[in-house]
Figure (tube, rainbow, N blue to C red):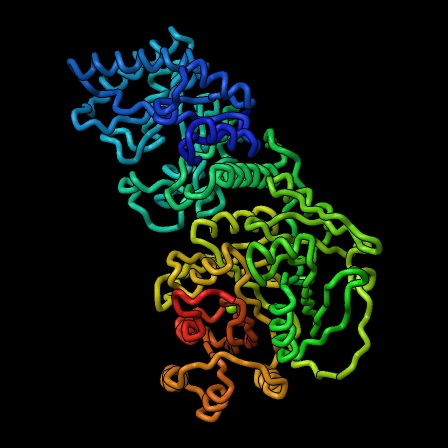
Length: 630
Ligand code: MG
């Protein structure tokens, strides 16, 4: 069994594609012929290049418009086929992907199609090659895998089998169960790709390629399980993926593809232990039970701005690191670390991104197991020199270079604050404002990075994604994807910005890359919290008075309550009888801000209805174009 990826999924020239594919962990490739045509060397050179990287060329693709032609067209097609066979021999590839014909002159006569495919099989047999026949949904006559199977059965040759593509089989809403009748020994190749859950007329999808397994909504685990159970022993291949998904660096796309494939096959073998795949052993997906801490990288000036805002949020500086310029600010179960060291990871994060969140601690059941799963899925393990009295906490690098530490209760790790930090004598007693824990964290990134982050979280953790919501920013659209742990203890909002003129886009441009843009803190009584924040001098985002007129008109709320919300700049929404209240801070650090939320009656969303109002208010704080950052 080989884990392969189509070379067309990965950007770059053939050399960079193959080296990215090999270092991601794949053992084979589907060679997309134009990638070979653009290669400067011979077929033997390509073969040697692949072999030197430990990659098998499992298949050459595509061969189009073969069956159903007559006269000169037919003769020419067979000549084309023989020259392709020559190339395959030189490449050391024994399998050719033939797509069902889209040729306008292709005959629909079943007998002729069968005769052509039988001739194809016998010519392949003479050269010791094999054909994987793929039904293309937009083909002239053979449009489904069941129609292709009928032809494979009729031709009845060991050199002629079926290629299956999950996107083609499932994107029209079909269930994988109908594939149960396909015998495994007739399947020569399997391509995996996902798609958003929409009602497609799949015949129109010719130019829309799929997403990586797990990024869309298709039942790929069901698809792979049925094929594996049928006795299929060939390659599992990540098929060509769509334009937005493939825009990253070649190494990032290959790493994502490998992570998606291994995660999928792991899920299948977990659901049916009789099925085993040649993938690394993985601990099961990790249940994250909360945020233990968030760490900001700052210099002295930005550190003062941040700690000032934390003070006005009624946080208290409780501890100081035993040997470093690092402070712990705390309220309820929220731990915020402010790191103003002049060296180490936080300082380099500060130098590349400005003041920002550089590290986060997730509470998990077993930290070592978490790192084991994440690193088997291709996430780099992070470590930095450990000083006296410091603990070596397991950590990995997140997708954007941020660090994620894992804190568990099995070892000393949960006592990190007692061991690494000294208590600070309390000079003044700030009463807390009732902020209990972190409700959610919003990370902003380029739209194409969003799919990558999502895949990282859902493959490593027991988290679910919900469908993407488009938020209208006054200067463009921001795509927002929610990822949550089963009980909602850990919630991420991933925001993908397309235009740098949006508030999110300008955040990205100013800080040179993806990062945490807001932290939402949970209160059980937002009005009481609001009163504490007033006393502490908290600077909140001012909301347009028009918003409150609209609230009165939209929801049947008591006028006095709306007036109170207006006085406190509280945003409100109601859905299915559940309520959500929000207060925002003014933005600091080129667009970073805090949010205070209250969920009432089991509200599960994030106040998407209020996003345009909030964004309009935030835009007023944006630095005008051309003004240098501070
Ligand atoms: Mg929010």
